[in-house]
Length: 86
Length: 163
Image (cartoon, rainbow over all chains, first blue to last red; front, side):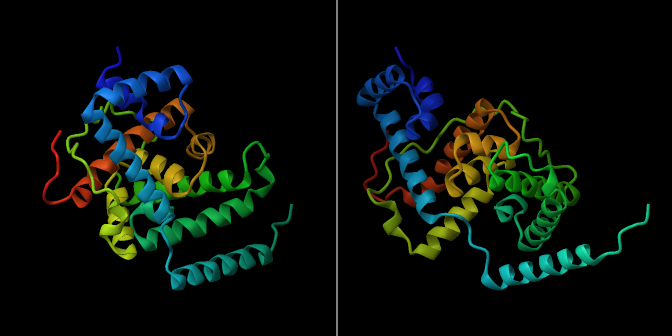
């Protein structure tokens, strides 16, 4: 019989759809009978949905432009640096 | 991504610049075993971690380290049906940034690469130089901690059913 601890250990893989059919059956049987695990599953699923919808953290445009300028300057300097004689 | 590693814009910018320069200097070393983006991500993460190590030499940043932290969720109460509608988009973004920033570094990186940057499990593991089982352990703990950190913002104030 699957315990709440077993469900917690497999929760991340289950949310990702990365579990075998047998494990999925066991998890779903437990979830249908355990209110605490149902809430844990539902709130974890909602967490990932919110995080995924928000997406990558945005770099402010000014910072992004400043960074590209700095990188290009350094790259140009690197390319034009005199090569040491052998 | 480096903002979430370093925790501030100045260090994130410095690390990004160094990562791009290193990638440029070592382009010949890219062997094509992983996607170019994954290779670049790995260089960037190493630079970000190096920057944090220099700033806070006492903070443990070993990605392999498990720490034996078995995380037990405590706030297991139902959330609002459509929690995203409770906040404006910018408020929500700030809420997520704060919650992600509060995670221990190894778990934070797993969540950032998988759930924010949408890398596959294999790509995230490669970018962090971890095996897939370790990445999955970090991801599970990171997601559970993130859920816990966000819970107070999404549990309805009245009428929540305690379980």
